[in-house]
Image (cartoon, rainbow, N blue to C red; front, side, top):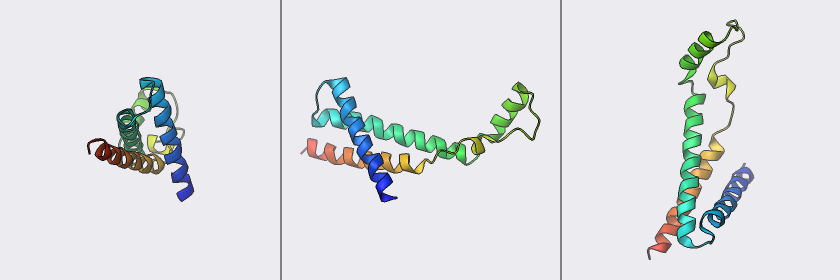
Length: 111
């Protein structure tokens, strides 16, 4: 389990360096902070969105749309929380770790 989290974190750090090279054409501390802030919060936003969907918050709305726009029987319909089976905990932990590393870099930058 620790290995999967470390693979996610390493892949995210590589993504941050690649995006920093693509957008800013250089790698320095400020560009790393900017890109890691965006990537970290996108990971957190996506993981929290999947969390809300998995808990069944949008099941009623999704069921009403299915009822209005399809001709399926009630047996064929499944709630949205059963359709999305993506595990959000990897993205959440990776987003938190990325933001912690970004905060450490921010402290180094302002010293």
